[in-house]
Length: 291
Image (cartoon, rainbow, N blue to C red; front, side, top):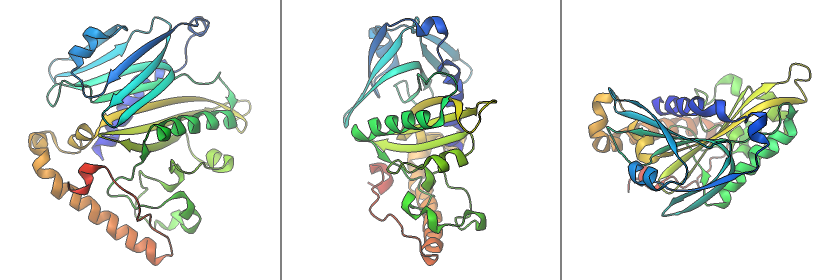
């Protein structure tokens, strides 16, 4: 999906800020910032107690606004009508705005302060799952991409991934079920990228950890970069259409969604035949229910 590449770009745009310099780590100041999701960017920037640096590509009407932390960590309060998400230990914040579709806050990249370099895998794993618990406690729930089968982590042992039962590697992989914590063995068996998807209200969250194993003790410790990308579902789905179609994306969306749900149905039929249970109780975001 094109939208997944956008999420990756947002992640990479901010990941170099995750590890503070030694001098910054010595500072204890914290800046508090309230962000009403969906509010006009210009209005937010005018009232923000934290200054932002703009980087714009006028030819394509894209702008990125990076928080100037002045060495301070950020405490964020991210509000939408369905509830507020509180985050602390934020080491980087980037707001992306596509002026061709909206001038409101629709996409954010948030870098979390990580543990000291070469902390244990166990400690970093605990840090990531604590972030997932923070999201779930604020009302966020796991998200299945419409083309992916609704297979929870508890069914993972029934699958033989080498036989490609699912056809392709799903983005909503059962191993990254936000409602289930993988074992340390499973954690270490994964490659360098860890990805979870959740949603709440009109926004989707992508929690990502990027792992760089220690050269001296790769099975014990590593450097981890941890980020949280938030994107409105409107922006999320708009990006799944070709540039020439985006002005009509709402009209095209029902057929687009139906095609992806058909893919899911075919995969789930194969999974059921193999004895895998489907998470029928999953409730998708409102716009993906045809309402």
